[in-house]
Image (cartoon, rainbow, N blue to C red; front, side, top):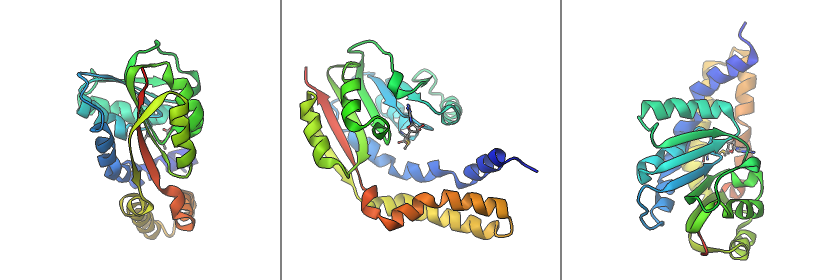
Length: 230
Ligand SMILES: C[S@@+](CC[C@H](N)C(=O)[O-])C[C@H]1O[C@@H](n2cnc3c(N)ncnc32)[C@H](O)[C@@H]1O
């Protein structure tokens, strides 16, 4: 009998959340296009995961991306994508916690963090990452909309200018992510209805969909494009 981890990773391949996540990358493009052109920028992608935004940033910028995450499995997935897309000259992977980042001062043109700043909190992220950015460099954060007012206050407190921001509504999250993900999971529940172990795993995979249904507003998000005041 397959062990639970193997079964889970096979099921995750079948669910392929990345394929739904990709439907939101137009917002990564929208945010990137708010930054004035920088030739071959050095970009730090914090909490890159399996690299859906990372790949797009490499394509958009033609620069050098340092992609950091604590999760070795996600980085391995990203490593395979980088090889397949011939992006090895553009993306370097670093397995490390964002609480232990070590880079030169004033080094990066852009720091990018989608869905990850909550790990240390918006305030700590703004504080910790400031020193790695060149004066005039850009920090782009994609975060929950729930703390919008406090986040906007912190941006100016910590010496950044808010250049641009835009919201991704709960409706967009529903149409582009939760609805297709829900459909995929329902199809699998039909396919594996007689397999108790897989049905149990599918229940776990449904948790975020249930959370969304209970409180859709909590899932709206916002992109902040900030500039380090020189
Ligand atoms: C919601 S995912 C976002 C992934 C990717 N940025 C995206 O938008 O698709 C959050 C990522 O933060 C990473 N993460 C969580 N804690 C971390 C830490 N302490 N240091 C670095 N990365 C961390 C997770 O492993 C996960 O890949």
